[in-house]
Amino acid sequence: MGTSAGPGQLMTVRKKRGLEIAEREAELQGRRSAFDRERSRIFRETGQKPGGKKTWSEEERAVRAELRALEDERATLLAQIDAELAELRSQQAEFKRIRTSVWAAGRRKKPPVTKKEQKLSTKLAVLQSERAHVDGAVRRDREMARYEEAVWNTLLDATSVDSSYW
Image (cartoon, one colour):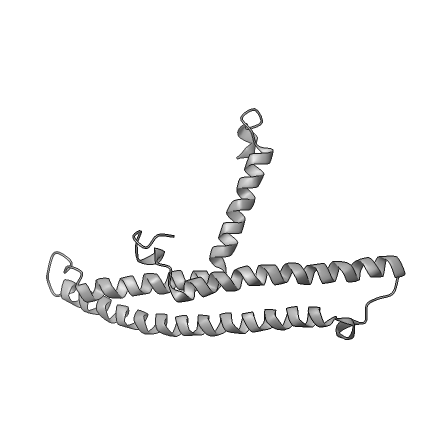
């Protein structure tokens, strides 16, 4: 992502960390799924249910502990972002209230947006973008786009598209 596109496109420290957390979680979830598949395979072969947490290997315990730590870090980052957003939104509401009262006082045109309001809007956009990166929405959107593109490229071609698709 470039830094010249706009305020929402800047790669901040929290955005980077959010992407790192999402990437690491995806990797760890894959490893945890492998452990679950192995337990399922053993159950199919032996017919005996696994013993739960007692049967987890040290590696599986480490994976689960790291997943919990990443989840806690994500929650902390989201709480920080939400606190900042709440503060800025209250300031934005005050600006809107002032602008509305000036406009209602008899002016025909709305007053111009001030530099402070523009800075506030920019900060809000950056925080909302950070929140989307930290909570995993960006990663999920990218995965869904890759999935939809793969479906489109494998199932639909120029000869198979007709009106029944929409």
